[in-house]
Length: 154
Image (cartoon, rainbow, N blue to C red):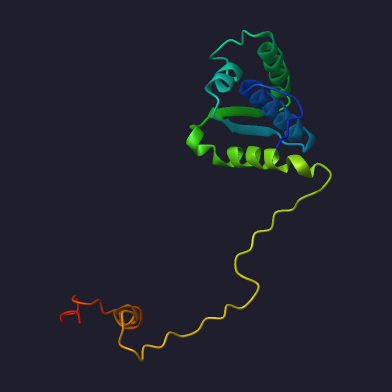
């Protein structure tokens, strides 16, 4: 399940990561999921949630407690750290949520087009003239590269 969150309040990166994880757990629970697997590029959050680091700041402790409780609703729970450069989907979703700032009252659907809906008007290249295009056209049509096919270039 993928989702984007637009925070309507100021927050830190770590708190945003925790908010996203809490929301993801609740959404997974609401859909009836029995297993939960999530990825994060935040070493701090992953290690706190997995018990390798202790949450010290009060707000982090509160987030940790919420997640600890929500984890019990699943047969399995995994939160894995991934390098930031592999977190492209999450970065794209966060940019999408930020870009939609002016679109709060509208629903926006993203369409993926695999090809153009209008026919392309492609004109054949005429090589009646012997100019700079001739070797390029011969290479495209016949696979002959100037000076490579045994003949010197003109």
